[in-house]
Length: 220
Image (cartoon, rainbow, N blue to C red):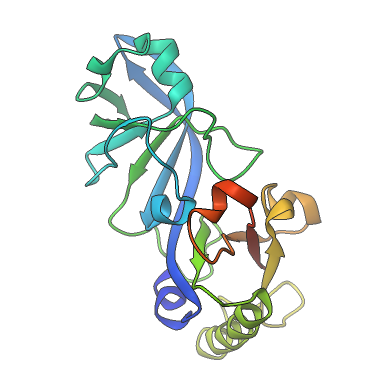
């Protein structure tokens, strides 16, 4: 579904799939429970963040850690970059430090580690495991993006009716949601089993920090 969205959504500058789950993370010889966000695609480009230090992860063996975690567990030491953390049965190298205050795109989650995937894991049709974040191309309106997503959703339902059928037997829909609403988990807000697809509806990435003109998309 994510690959179809990337190839069929011409309104988007970039897109990324992500999900956040708690993990038992070992660092500096101690283990604690932290939320880890796994990403595929242009997540950092879509969010427009500027790192506090270091660089973005370049492969699946590197991670970005949160500013608060860096302060708390590494005392703000530059030596943390190049250090390692372990979770999910693997060791990862720390490539950079996220900016202060950045904790992902969902107010109900507080990830402190971000890792790359080559593609969404378990990419089954109709999977509701991942959210999607994206940046609209300059000049594209939410109405235009919605129209495009309506066509895409109808096509996916026609091609994969068993996977794209809702509980009432109808084709599921993709709906654009304003950013101030998408910052909360859409599934929890609407009390329905939805896959939240978040979209940063900006003419340029820099506007994210200036006006937070963010929007989201729901898969119903």
